[in-house]
Length: 261
Image (tube, rainbow, N blue to C red; front, side, top):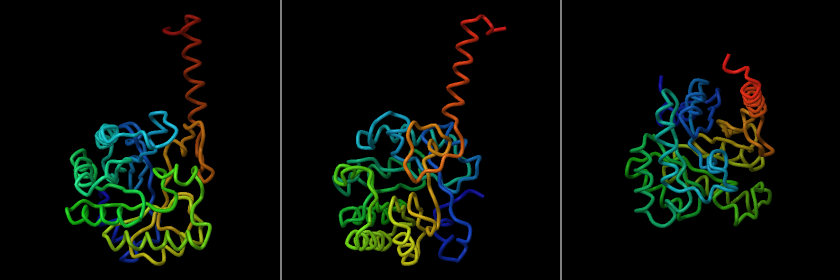
């Protein structure tokens, strides 16, 4: 059965969250087919593709059109998972109208929900309006990569009591605004546990310990395709090296005349 927003929401609210929610990212049809066939509950077209697929140092250069192109490609590869798409930097911050237009465009491209970073009042207002217009929203607090310059790098958040209180308050505000789930990124496990207990909607952790209702990783990190992985990522294969060796073998056979036979 295909996963829906309602199913994800009821997963926790009906006490069925004994089996955590598995989330992986995708950026094209091939990665989408792989993670969907693997049985991921949610496929996230994350703005991490700015670094994974486009070679940028941060997510900030990514445009709305970049995300729309990738969203359409991923849609063609997903059959069962819920497809959630990040709204890139400056596609929703400028106004409520811009947020509705950007999110609506993602739904027209095949997304079933969008994800916004941050939990301050401006973002909460955007979430409230999007939900009112029938656009499901996943929240995201803790380390929010679009704020990397403000944080001074991809640093762990919520380590002080003041930061922890702020992040908890933001998560509650996003729930009140109508978000159906929230990503908790790179925060202490104890804070993630407290947020998960305080909310009636599922939490999806990434570098946030084991107390969340689900976990997400960037698929390129899982498969060992990235040249660099964050400290909380677990690498399950070394496909980057295998791919290099396979390509080297092809080049060698061409030069030696072995291929084609």
